[in-house]
Image 1: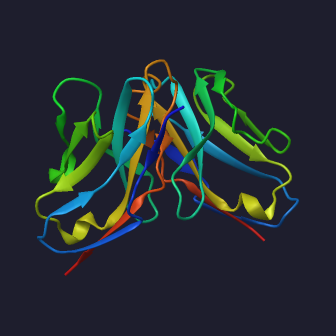
Image 2: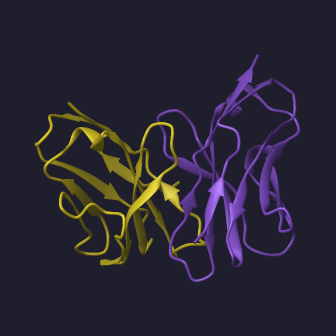
Image 3: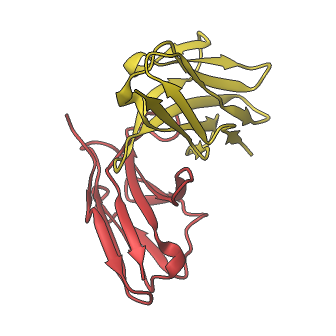
Length: 114
Length: 113
């Protein structure tokens, strides 16, 4: 069964350092999402791509976060510089279509900022 | 704007007992509703969704949910839980014309042997 791949699974960094997360969606899925999940809360959308275009990045802290999906396949989420408050699980999901179509989630990257 | 409220942050239940996890939504337009499950150290997995049609929706692992428009609810139920059902459960909502989902804060279900 096809799965969404994410790496690394765990990342520990010091504040002010740069970090990057990678996501490879299920083949053929045009829609890709990055979520941030703080411990004890539900996932919060950071950015949504349709193919290589950003559809929604209204909740992305653009002064320090960036995301790209250059060829409309895999995607990278970057934080520079990392802050203590960025410690969270970063989840990637993909779907064939946006909104009502089933989203398939990767295992996530747990980020700890010291 | 749409949102969901999960009224219980934690629900302990004995094995083989029934369980109901509550979810209420707020939206001024037609909505689509979802339940996702998250096992420890894993991503989320879809349990079931309501898009249209029958208000009783059956999902995987023996779970079902009922869409109640008058009460703006979409509660999740299972008649007999197993130890393996221990996980975090998230209710989510979207609406016509929206691009993405809004998740609730989650309910941690703990099944006690």
